Structures are given as structure tokens and as C-alpha cells.
Image (cartoon, rainbow, N blue to C red; front, side, top):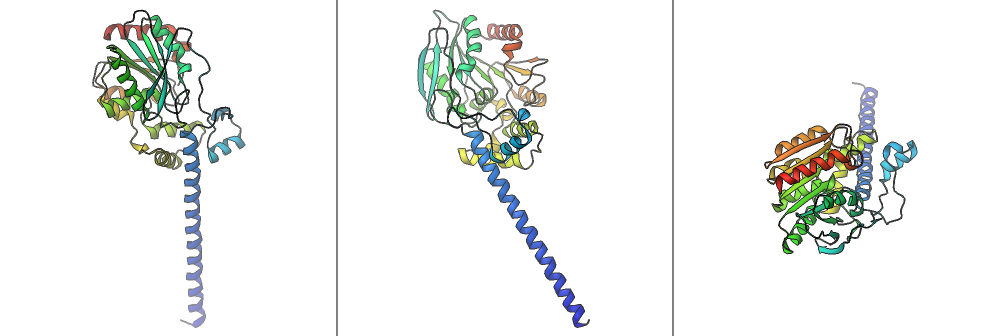
Amino acid sequence: MSDSLWWQGIKGVQRKRKVLKRLQWIVIGLFLAMNTIAYFHAYKFTHFSESGTDKTKNPKELGTSNKIKALLFGINNPKPINTTQPARPFEVINLQSSQKIECWHIKLDSSKGTVIVFHGFSGNKSLMLDKSEEFNKLGYNTLLVDFIGTGGSDGNNTTVGYKEAQDVKVCIDYLRQINEHNIVLFGTSMGAAAILKAAEAFQIDPTCAIIECPFGSMYKTTCARFKHMNVPCFPMAGLLLFWGGVQNGFWAFSHNPTEYAKCVKFPTLLLYGEKDAEVSRAEIDNIFANMTGKKRLYTFADAGHENYLKRYKVDWVNTVSVFLEENL
């Protein structure tokens, strides 16, 4: 081999090494950028901003530039505040969970039992007053709860039902301490997931429970949010879950209401909207199949991930009333 050919071969190897090194740095840069974005996105998703901050609109309502901004820096989600109070006489109860949680206790002159009412993600107890009123009309006391981080409760963060399970247990313990024997749990979305987690973590044993549209797993509900923005969920959904768990002290990939359902031995009514874009019918079917106690599934044909009471009041009240009569 001539010296010139040998030298050209050396140069070729050097060029390849330079290209590989650049590609290596590009991959490292992309990896760091994705993790940085996921870190801030996870923080904003699980930590409410100061009340009064403008809330980011629904992804479907965002323009291209604002959608990109939300994808890069996360959503603004102000701490939910209670905007109204019960029309009926009520007592403010402060209970000690991982932090202080604020509840409204509405008591009737005579009651069949007490329904503990748990709200969904980014909700608060004032948004559950319509459900509370229906339970009151059916003859039940209600205990409306602000999860940690919302309304009148302490803190500003959420774990989307994982650590909120302790709030569920604390409320049950409170009612038992005041000699309430008929305890019904009601939870919607995140509130439903918290009830399922409490069944697994604390072996709770209420008289019965009514749960609406619980998600199958934290990963699936995170992916659903990316799909709303027409963005592939891989790999960002996994990174978001990882950093959200790290920031809040738990392994978010294990937050799996489908598995928790195996510990549900008490009678349960599961409600679902057939056009729910955030929770699939397969997730609901799997949760329902895993429940080991007496159970019933009722669906609303045209409902999405919403408050069923607004459009389906008669069906909702009748279904709930029959279930409660059968199990109390």
C-alpha cells in the first residue's frame, strides 16, 4: 500500500470518529433536553401554582405556539380553591393526614349513614356539592373532602391518587371514631383511584363504594394527556412519570388502580362514560374484572370524562339509589 493510500485510510478513520463523536454528543444533548423538559413538566403537573395564576387552557383549545410552550415548560395549574359553600348547615372539620385536610360535614336530623365524597384531579370539595346534595336527598350525611394540596387543605402538590389514599383512610377512621357504622365512599376520577389505592394499601372496609371513571394506571392516564395534544407519548410519558415520582417520593410506575382493584372486597358500583377520551373501556373492564366483592358496572352511552350528574341526573340518581338500598 502506498503512503498516500495509507494516509487517506487514516483520514477516513478519523472522519468517522469525528462523526460518531458528534452523534454521541447530539444523543447526549437530546437525552438531557428531554429529561430537563420532563422534570419541569412533571413538577408543574404535580404541584399547583399560586391561586390567581392563569390556568393553561385545554390542549385542544391551544394554538400551535402555546401548545409548544405547554409541551416545553408544562401547564399552569393554580391551586384549586372552594368557590361556594353548602346551602345546608355544615361543620368544618380539620383532620390530620400527611398534612392537614379540610372537610365539610353535612349532618341530617336522621340519616341512613354517611357518604365520604372525594373529588378528581385539580378539583375541590365545592365542586362536589351537587353530588353531596343528591346523597343528602337520599337520606345520607356527607363528608366532603379537600385532598392534600387543594381547597382548604395544606400543601400544594398532588400524587394523583397515590398518597391521597391516606386521606381516604383518615376520613374513614374519623367517622368510625364518632360511631358512624354505615360508611359509603364516593370518588370520581382521581378520587376513585385514591379509594382503590386505599383498598390495597390500608385494607379499608367501608360498607360500600361508588367510583366513577378511575384510570387503569398512572402511565396510561399520562399517555392519554399526550394523545390529547396529538403528540406521541413515548418516551416523554415515561420520563414524566419517572421525574414526577422522584419529586413526590414514590415510584409512579407502580400506581396501578387495575391491580389495586384485586383488594376491593366490599360492594362497589363502577360508573363510566362510553365516550371517555381519558379512560378507555378496556381499563374499566379490567378494573371491574379484578374486583372480588359484590359489584355492578353501569355506563352512560354518550358521556365523556365528565360530571355525569349534569346530563344524566335521573339515571345517575336512580342507579345510585338502587345500589345503596341493596347494600345498606
